[in-house]
Image (cartoon, rainbow, N blue to C red; front, side, top):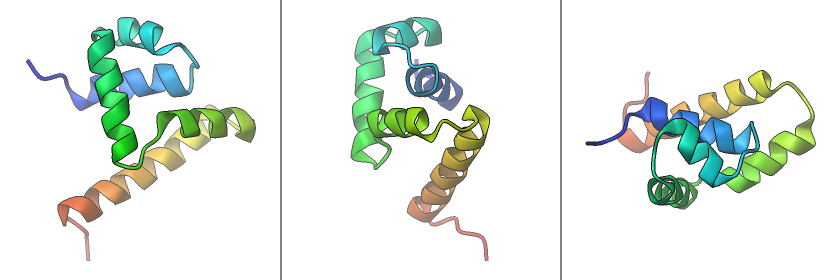
Length: 88
């Protein structure tokens, strides 16, 4: 059974913003380590390098919520562009 986007987002949040190991993040998101690793690799191939975002979040020192909102907005824009669902 395919996991939902919410599960992927939860895994990413635990890894990137909570700074847990991928193994710990996978356990909390209730996915196997293999699945978590595959999702992380596919995200990087698509331009969302979780390790770079994790480092940027630490360096930014700002609110995690603000950074999360910015990243989510950018991801949604990329998604719309790639799927050809741009508004306007």
